[in-house]
Amino acid sequence: MTGQGTARAADGTEIAYSVSGQGPWLVLSNSLATDRRMWAPQMEALERAFTVVTFDTRGHGASGVAKTPFTFSTLAADVIALMDVIGIDKARFMGLSLGGMTGLALALERPERVDRVICCDARADAPDAYKAMWDANIELSEKGGMPAIANATLPRWFSESFRANAANAPTLEMVRDMILATPVEGYKMAARCLQTLDLLESLEHISVPVHFVAGSQDPAAPVSVMRDMADRVAGATLDIVEGAAHLSNMEDPDGFLKAAQPHLR
Image (cartoon, rainbow, N blue to C red; front, side, top):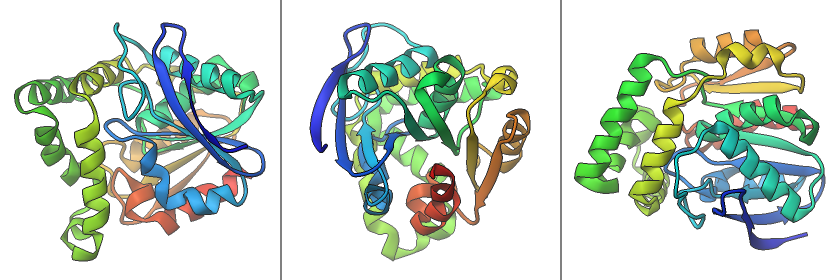
């Protein structure tokens, strides 16, 4: 099964998706201010082993912008609506940052629909400093639009050595393009959703297999934070992508696959 389409969420928001590859179902979920293109470095390898569903989180890419505030329960429900439209009973799920958090919410709320979760470069709580950071970013987006967000975000998403290497310019430009293509209102609503993040104390109740992947230089989801998350989930494992910052799948595609792919099987 291959192709593209849209699924309608419970509140009417349209969720755009693509299907490709062959094998067991695998759903991929993007980070804040990106879209399904962020998985391009992994697609060829994943399509050889799985039927891959990529989608744009509400407010991103080709998906609609929600009319009212939402939480991670909403984002988990969006995934279920997407699976229902495609006809997927149960799937593996891999998400990064906002997508990884969505995967944790999905594992908590709809474990019967999830075979396993790979949670990458994400956290499970929103301490005061984290909430304040999103307040500042929302204000920045209102004053300077998405170009201002791109300028502030790229240094946090990629390590200094990666950004300094001219060979990586195409990757950086692709990510900048995804950020610029994100509607300001979509960005703001997702940022508000991140401020509601409150899954940490519930992680012990997750019953499906979970594997965590952390970039060793990720300032947004430090290794120490992700190690604590892994310790709270029964049987969970953690791999580290050395030298990578927040978008570890784009900074080190091979290292990321080495850390994530064995746990998808």
